[in-house]
Amino acid sequence: MRIINIVSHSEKQTVALAKKLAPSFKRGDFISLSGSLGSGKTVFVRGLAGALKIDEAEVSSPSFTFVNEYPGEIPLYHFDLYRIKAPSELYEIGWDEYLGREGLVVVEWGEKAAEMLPARYYRIDFKIISENEREINMSLVEQ
Image 1 (tube, one colour):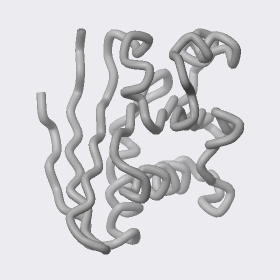
Image 2 (cartoon, helix red, strand yellow):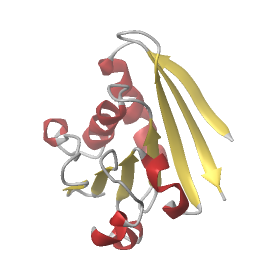
Image 3 (tube, rainbow, N blue to C red):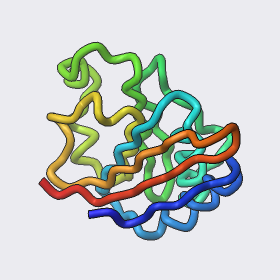
């Protein structure tokens, strides 16, 4: 089910979209972000962090650590699966434990763990249109 389909014309608009959507998400929600390198996934996470009263400047892509944890009233668990070779690697970092936590789990390159995603999650796809424009499609997936 498609919920949102918009075009962002700047990083600032992508951050603003994330901040506007943030109140819609609740503790325990899972968000899978898909899109090519540089399409705005981490920028979107910065906006979510800001809305959760987490310093946006602290948010970086956890490409080498797989997950960054940002404490707050609602904790943010930010995964980046770009470098995983097999979904089984997720067991080594406590994937199942994160799915049971009371924070917001956001996963860049979530499609790399398709068979390990929860039964209900938000999927947000980012597509580069031009240097500054991104098409952003969000849907709710219920399996």
